[in-house]
Amino acid sequence: MTTEPTTGGDAGVTLETQRQVMASSVDRLSALVHSLTPQQLRQQAYPAQWTVAQVLSHLGSGAVITRLRLDGDVDAQSVWDEWNAKDPDAQAADSLRADAALQARLASITPGEAFWLRFPMGPTDMDLTTFIGLRLNEHAVHTWDIAVTFDDSATIPSTEAELVIGTLAMMAGFAGKPTGAERTISVRTKGPERSFEIALRSDGVALSPRPILEAPDLELPGEALVRLVYGRLDPAHTPTIVGHASDLEELRKAFPGI
Image 1: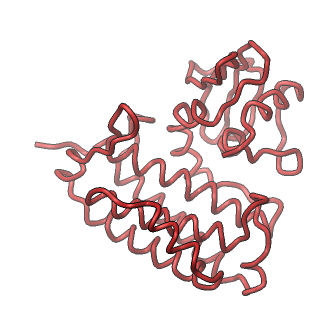
Image 2: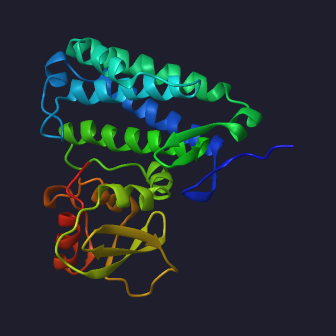
Image 3: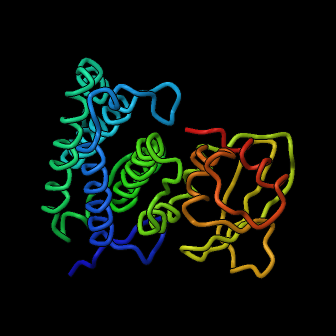
């Protein structure tokens, strides 16, 4: 007998929950893209080096690679080359088709298949929900990259942020950079309510959960913490934060963006 697999980032998150939240994110992106003109697809998105269409190309190629990896190995470079050769209109339209194809493949996964699937990453193997969780992270953050291009008040929906937060410890270790400081900053989030400590060290950054704090150094919305770790909490897109501005600035330096 198998059980519904849970994500390594948050033992309470099931694959079915991930599929539902991913579907919501896919629908949100689709509605946004269908509202854009050809000229808007060619505008610079939040990442300075990409247009909106290029962000969609990144998401589309990622959907293809994720879907193919569910069934075996994939030559990622050939997929990227194919998508880079598309014109902006095709990058946009094809990204939505690739998202839909990935959703169909995810819907077809049985509990038995989910239980045994593993995905090598360096010296370790990820389980399915950790693997899909990383795709959800990418989809949520890059959809925000597009949404905020046309709406400065855009945020990552709390349902998505709640799942992304479950993998932030892993992502922070990858994204964090030494700042020269040697200290620990405590953080509490709302929506969802969680507490973390972020250790700034000479060799990098570590984010780890801790019991809910009554008086953390910083308190901010959960989606803002996600954007902070991904280097997307610049002053122009920062909600109300409780705590010292100097602590937030130190964390911005630690997470320059990925």
